[in-house]
Image (tube, rainbow, N blue to C red):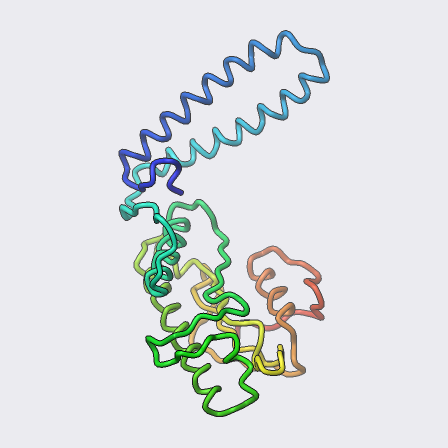
Length: 251
């Protein structure tokens, strides 16, 4: 995203692309001379290598087409901030920038790692997160866990606001995205994966209808939901993991 320049500023990006193009031109010129002096077997290996260079060329061409795109001037982060909120904001900004520049169309992000010992004194929870998750249904500990989950959801809403502020097509980035937010457990004390609290957010480029709460019978699995989402992406698959079918996602 930043290359070796550390900046998204337009002039810096142009200079980096020009340098990369010059290097590729020099490499291809030498390869052409070398190709005439090697045997068939080596020439085959050479063609494979040349194709990888062409792949780089295509990426440079795509970046050149986007050079006039208005991007926020964002400096490459120097490291992991101590402040959790600042770290989250940087990670959100990087994701939005990657989507805005079409460097990727798929992102996975974990807001809190498994077995995290992070406390949250800023919201009145000085306890370590993971030990707190083994609450044994103690009402006071469950309330603290709910406070952490609410806090994470608030930070997630900041991400959604950033996406909604970026124009994309006839709408914004959020209109054209499908985001799944949630966790792999519903009751962490017993490691239950039943009745998972999951949100689907975004416009899905037209397929997703917001403002709905859906409850499914017969305890379908998360894998069933993934199969259903892939179908909405026009990439139908028969099965993911232990999935047993698909779920109706729209009314």
